[in-house]
Amino acid sequence: MSDGAAIQSHVIRVAAALIVDSAGRLLLVRKRGTSVFMQPGGKYEPGESGAQTLARELHEELGLTLSPAALEPLGTFTAPAANEAGMLVEAEVFRAAISESTGAPVAGAEIDELRWVHPHEFGDLAIAPLVTERMLDLLR
Figure 1 (cartoon, rainbow, N blue to C red):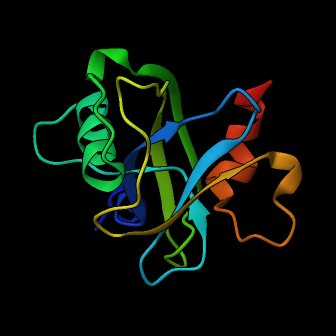
Figure 2: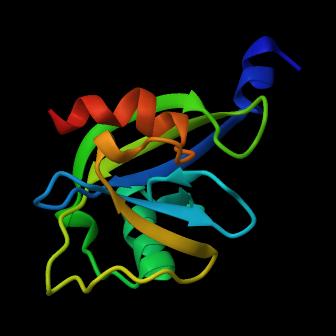
């Protein structure tokens, strides 16, 4: 295995949402069997774009109905994976605006809990490095 292949095998590719309410709180989720809160989103299915993946995941996990075209691309960011030691997560991140037409987020599928959390309220809450190291700059 080449060094490039070894590095690729330690990377989890996902599409993730940056959802912020009018009070500046981020929507974070905690998956079943974990203790770390992270951005909503998930892994790609074959042939999906990042926006298609995220729209599907937001519907499956939170019951939100968003068109892939409604998602604003913010870039691709890398950070240590929250729940898998020694792995990196590479997230294609999109800003997602939710409203009455998208529905209100409700925990479903593998999501055990969702929380609206202001960055000043992170405190002792376990938050994924992708959020704390990469997403906070996008809020400014």
